[in-house]
Length: 382
Figure: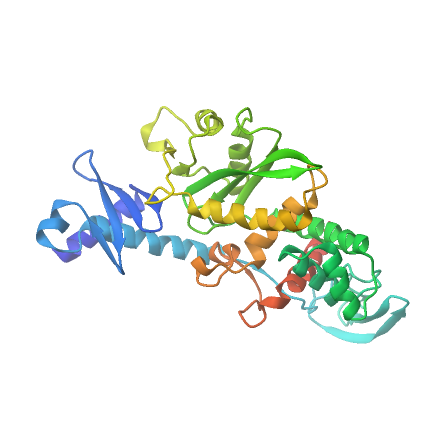
């Protein structure tokens, strides 16, 4: 009988006849009726309200379905895992041969650059990492970026660099952030994160040139990956369908659940982007979130709080298309470890890894990400 329950649970998981409501709550469709059963995690065990589990006290097929679904999701993420390689000049840029030798140093006023020679095609080359024409070292530049996105002001970052012997203005620090954030974004936008099937949307007010604006953000519920964003002039009158459409284009699919507050903009956007006549294909819209309980919006409020803390240090944002929006989104997704994710970044949970990025070397993750993205972009002709 146990084997039979496991097989039926696997059938349910393969047919995707279950909906993830939260980290600890799933709704599983019955195979014989139109009912849905709630599978909830209590401690380290899953509990179901179906008669088989309640009266027989056994691991029912609905619990097996949830367990199989989690295993399948992990296997898919491993198969589609994206690794952002570190700095490793091991192949020729012309013929891709691995028969490389170091061929002297090229000296210029910006520093020394290693030259390579290929024994296969006799090509001599240097690799442009994007820092060659910068007077400051890559370590100084990426340290400045890391400090800025963790909450320091431009002038505090400048002061830190001065203590390290790097004399630059706060405007120079901003120019670095602007240049390398755009560089990383051009590469990271090509990567599709393996997010879950429940998304959350919320809005937070920001000051742009002293005027009130609203940042609409959409995040994956399971991985905390910040998927999409847009800045609006108003809250009630804004059409949020652009936010939902942007998220669908990035991920390549739509979620099974979209969780929002009761703002009318979300309901109208849901009708445009997610609602269908087919019940099986229709995204469930949960809009009765509360401050506590299963349907709270604590995850989005936590992310909003992070952004508000950063924006206070800046004393407002200077323009609608400020690099701060893109920069903090990348910092949240790729560099900031989350306690709720066991110290991992949302990108790591989504199957995107920066090679060599362990807990011990995390402070250097910004420099590896900047350099890796630069190398990858150069290979693709960007």
